[in-house]
Image 1 (cartoon, helix red, strand yellow):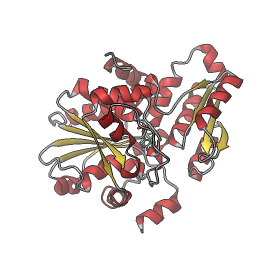
Image 2 (cartoon, rainbow, N blue to C red):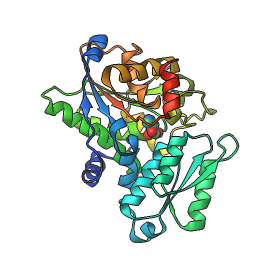
Image 3 (cartoon, protein in one colour):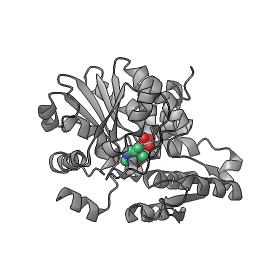
Image 4 (cartoon, rainbow, N blue to C red):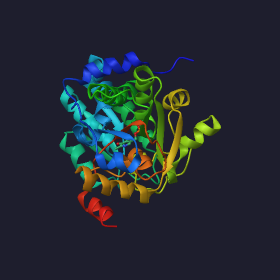
Length: 325
Ligand SMILES: *Cc1c(COP(=O)(O)O)cnc(C)c1O
């Protein structure tokens, strides 16, 4: 079966992103190595533009619009980071953007999205269907809807995070990664990363990490079909997706070795680790992959392990409350 994206799509995305995205650092921590017995490489997408990897996919998608699409602009629906990513990408490319966001999204994310010049339309995520609202806006205004994960250009853009991580590990004089841990919401990030890893480090196991309360992808891979779940109660708001995408599921089926889960308590312990030991502000969702390793959910002693730290956008009051809980 041919997959929706291949390595060349990721390499092309990397060329488009090079002039505009940050090449985020790949950081090490002696404490993390000592605690896990592994050699751990953290790819810090909390330090990416807009504070998360989502800028990669959004810019890769919007930069491929036709002239007519550019004039009408982009629509996105998102709980936050994808919204900011589309808003900033649209501004950089000189096109309008309309963003559909839940009323209860963190205020910092709504404000940041408006700050990038996008129009924000709020909705109630318990009673309204964001996909229908986004589709209606796209139809009424002729704008192009860019979904947060189920889109080949978005998935290819996200894959550049793993491409850079794998290059950075080689540049440090280290051997190839044995394992790559990636958080999973709708599966856009892990799809791109898995395709990059399969090409650049074929022996590397790709392990997805979901919140325990929202393990729809773990269930989907076990059953061989996309499982839909109710809105999960978890502090990992960026992974509160109800189901994988058609395209992301096709890639995950083929290229992801397994999906494991972590609890909210393990996410909080990992946020504290990042703040205390690495001086990094990481949002709860951004801690998923690291939590699986640092909190002992998966033991990878003696292995070189890549960990994607996916984002750092969290309201300060909420951050403080979680760190002192
Ligand atoms: C969107 C997001 C995720 C989940 O990514 P998917 O591509 O939907 O799997 C994880 N972490 C952060 C910080 C995000 O913004």
